[in-house]
Image (cartoon, rainbow, N blue to C red; front, side, top):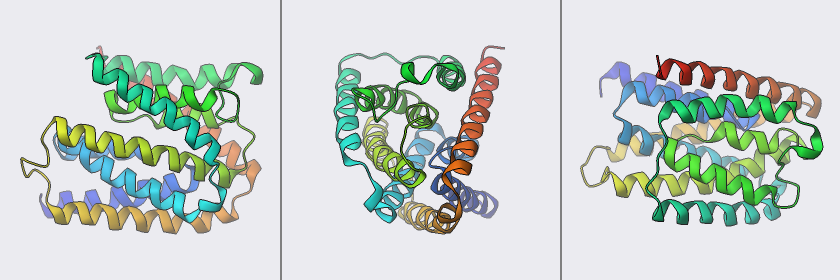
Length: 247
């Protein structure tokens, strides 16, 4: 990598980890878009997985007292089902189809009455979240917008939302890291420098740590308002990208 690419890479990891640390969302999708512009797809998938695994597990550790482990355990049941399904069925939707679905989903979820919205703190909500989030994460590499739909209207406070989402995404990114690392032989091909992976871990942890100060000062009302706006903004971006894919 050139110096310019390395600087862009470092800045992207720190900034997106910071954004994810404050709102528990958006950072992963932004990082994937930047990674795809800098390196090949299989390498981007693994680098993204390393950065997001670090960012999410470190965030879950920082806010460990707020993690709702009941939700995480139910989520893991759904995630395991998704991995098992993909192990038997070789189906991967087109990128455009995935992006359009991601773009529409937040608006549908926000427009539905509360009683009809799938939420992780409701019966079977976390299991459904694990299934859909796991499928999308392995097929498209990014599933944050879908995960956000299950959390955005839950009754959790902001710290519990951020901490629990981080724990769930940590497991999802670990699964993706193994999946793409083994399937595309990225490790064996030497496409990734050990120093680059170490830098990914350190920078992601740094960005996440810096975000704690902001989240501490952000009230629950402001947090919910901003998260809804971010979810809708991501939905628009996904729709535009999905439509552009077919043009």
